[in-house]
Length: 128
View (tube, rainbow, N blue to C red):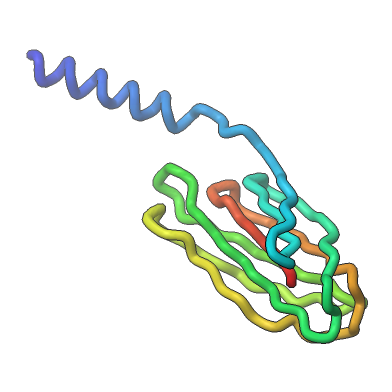
C-alpha cells in the first residue's frame, strides 16, 4: 500500500515539474571582443556588431532544457544579404554542444542572428 502511495506521489510531482513554464529571456553580452546573444525562447533575433569585418569568427552553443524531448535549434547568421544557417540537436543535458567557424560573405560589421528552436533549448550565438 505504501509503495502505491509513494509511486502516485512521485508521479504527481514529476508531472507538476514538467508543466511549470520557464521564464523566457534573451540577453546580450560583450566579452573579450565577442558580441554574444543568448536566448531560451522559441524564436528570437538580434543584430550583433563585428569588431573586425575582414575575418569573422562565429560561435554557437546549445544546451538542452529539462524534459524528455530532444533539443533542436536552427541558428542563422545574415551578413550583407547572405544567410548561413546550421541545425543543432541534443538529446542529453550533460554538456553544452558548441562550435566555432568562420563566416564568409560581405565585409559588413552588422550581422543579424536568428535563433529558432523547438522550445527545449538554451542557445548562445556570438561573433568576433
